[in-house]
Image (cartoon, rainbow, N blue to C red; front, side, top):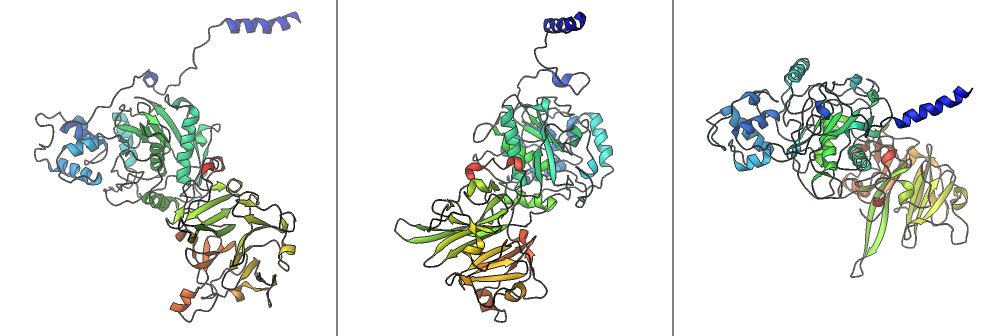
Length: 603
């Protein structure tokens, strides 16, 4: 008994007396441990002469048989550092193509401007590469990557040169693929989608944190970078720090020189700042001076991360100014967003975002100019579940940073699953109402919150049956028609027209939806259970939404152009994603990142 009590104490004394390591044991991936040797900050070798330019052109795919092939074994030429190509047509052609891609004067000569472009900080992926001729992958292939295929870490990453053995392995792998040379030209997406499902998991690997930024700063920037791609595609990204590594789709890490078991060493500060592997690994050169938003010094880690994630998702380099997929790092304003070409390229691979929506409406604001003139402006809002988007009609896209949690931008109304919105707007009335279930809320636009009581002192929310006699609940949707001064309430296949002046359901209602809003081309009609309806001041028309489709109600302009069109008829359905772009979900873990943007002062 005494021994049983005494033994733990003895063990504890021995444990405390033993020497403790000053830091956790480092992980290594290469047998000689060279990847964990301390490396000092060093500069990349600049491109200064014909030999180093040939190496550069081969490394980034501009010479035949690239990357990493012929130039590595060439003897260093003597003589002129610039120009002087000795009539080599292949090299002149490679330089001319690089100049064209870099939007430089195309001379085919190695001039100062071309050398300057070669020495800019850039991504390690080739600008031109053979791509596999593959159509869209079916979503039923499996839980992660297409059939969970992943290239081992010892294989060649995207871009640049590697060890001879790695080149052989890459060559054998590529021999099994159907090759197609990708010439530089107009922005376009390769015919390859890297992932087969919509929810992708990512992780900043434990041994791959940067020495320059705090852990939380790094993870925050990566969350934001993934969110930016999620805002324009049906993909959502979730940070996963605890699942087995085999379940992680995209792994990120920092390193210097030989790093993270990668077969390709980083070159130091000044040129290649990151590279992306074929199936989900992204490495950042910790010799570079990465900075966080909104700093305008160094290299923006957010911009680089967005670029490399684009590669992992399947995008090549684009030669369009303003595109995040340009190979070279272009310093710009602290705020940046995905270019139109980036959005269209990624959507060509993964598709566009669709409906349905709970509510859509235009928010009207009346303002006076400094001269006392009254002007009216509006913004369009889409609600789904507990999120909302502001749609900028003049730019034909959602506001950067959306969606946002409904309670952050709309105070006092239900936090999710709103049924309908109605704005009664006449010369004498300006009233806004939200509906959910059997109740409704009136909204105070001046103070940006729901009223707590009505003019008689009765509390909100109130019963729909009391505030709008004869209207059933719950509703599918509703909208106010300024032409007729009627509110149209929808439930199932029925429509209830409510006269706001008489405060009652109009005579002969309810009616069938197909009779009140008949189809122009039968049977092209939603018939029942529509998701939302709203009048758009931007388009001067009323729209009905159901699922991924919309129907537009014939307006006065349509009838002037075609007198055979009847009043309130529905034109044939069209796809929501072809008219309203990028109304996309994001993973809930990123929804609070842009709370400061939740205002309604932009349109």
